[in-house]
Structure formats: C-alpha cells, structure tokens
View 1 (cartoon, rainbow, N blue to C red):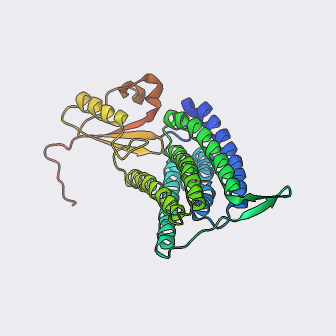
View 2 (view 1 turned 60 degrees about the horizontal axis):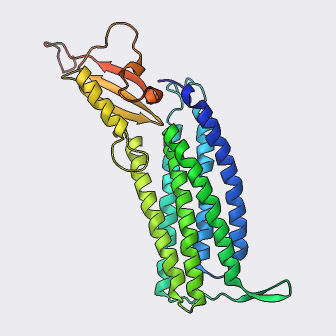
View 3 (view 1 turned 180 degrees about the vertical axis):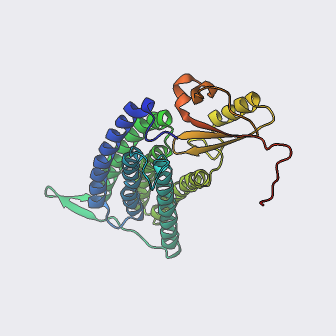
Length: 312
C-alpha cells in the first residue's frame, strides 16, 4: 500500500486545506454574529449550536491530512492512509449527535409550550425590534456556508474525500438552518409561538438524516465493506466497474474490494498473479486520471487439489 496522499492529488489537497482554514475563520465569524443576536429564540439557539459543531469536520480534515502524509513506521507498517476514514467517522458522529440533541431540545420546547419572545433593543438612540437583527444575522449565516459548500463539493469529488463531502453537507445544513431560522423569527413576530421550535425541529431532522447516512457509510468503510459512494449508501460506481473488470479478467476467481481512506484495494482469491511487474493502473476500467483510486492488487492463489485444510 502506498503511503500518504497519492501524488496526483497533492495540488487538490493543498487547495482543500487552504479552503478549510478559510472555512474555520469565516465560521467563527458567523458564530460570533449569531451569538450576539441570539436572544431567547430556540431557532437561533439551534442555529448557533449547529454553527459551533460545524467546525468539527474542517478541523478533523486538516488533522487527518497531516497524519495521512506520515511515512510508515514500525508500529504502523501500513502507513496512515486510513486517517481520513477515522476523520470521516468522527465528522459523521458529530452530525448525528448534533441532530439528535437539537431534535430533543426542540421537541421539549414544543411539549412545554415555551413562548419565545423577541424584545426591542435600543440602537443609535432608536428602539429596534431584535427580530430584524436576528434576521440580518441569519442572512449572514446563509451567505458564508452557501459559498463555502459550493467550493468544497468539486474538491470532495476530485479527492474522493468523504470527510470533505460531510463538511459540504454540513454547510448545506447551515444555510438551510438560516432560511428556517428566518421563518421562525418571523413566526414569533406574527404571534405564532410554536413556529420557533417547529423550525428548529425541522432543521434538526435534516441534520440527523445527513448524519445517519454519513455514519452508515463510515461504519461500512471501517469494517471493510464494499466502497461506498460519496453522497449515498450505494456502492460506488467506479467500484462496480472495477469489480466487473477484474471478474472478467480473472474468471472463476473471487474479487474482494475494500476502501482505505480515498483509495481502493483489490484482492483476487483463486488466481495467480501475472508474470512481470504489476501496475494497478493497467487494471483500472475508468478514466486514467482516476486510476490512482486503485492503490494495490493482491492475489490468493488457488489451493492445490490435494492440499489439507486441517492443521497437523
């Protein structure tokens, strides 16, 4: 197994790391603005907590990218290619915890019939309804993740990085939170006390759904399941093509594929390796610029007909 980030991805990885540093800085500014305008609104509280936890994916991405480049050692002879898998699991767990916590909080507010109030504040010598400040803060909280999410999506697909994809999904949840939050604040202003908690609950359901899907994919990867797609629980399209190509090339053999971080390893059970040097890129069935996805191929030769299966 090769160590570190594939050479073909280094430029894209550096761009992604710079983007994640920018993401952390802008998200902190959103947290500060939302915290200053929060008031007693359940929706604003939900959005603020979500913004705080949305720092987890970019942080774990940056840490895993650093670890992934470490060379193999005596204690880790296979290198650190799975650092991104661990980061993906952490980011997915954070999403699930966030969605579940906020959903319970919103449900309790509805059951208790908590009536959120939005008072007026004095600004520049005039009294202004705090709801307008909340809405302005929500608009700012929409713009930042909307821009960042769109920038991260193509990089996530290019790198086949599920942590970065989860981060982009978190950004999507953030701007959706902003839209729902504006609706909740307007609902309070119109006298609908339940609008605030209901908006927060709908936001929480969306976050929880994304988190469960990501955690399911992360769990499959950690227990050596078949490679999954970036944005769903389905088997990745390139893995389906690779399995078909290897099965056709080695008829009668079993083909096992597993994903380690962003790359795929293939094991051919019941076949002997071809003579000469084996270049995994020659076995990649898709576009050549994605051949880095197939990191290695190993072979388990068939047993001799008279081989004993019991130990001596």
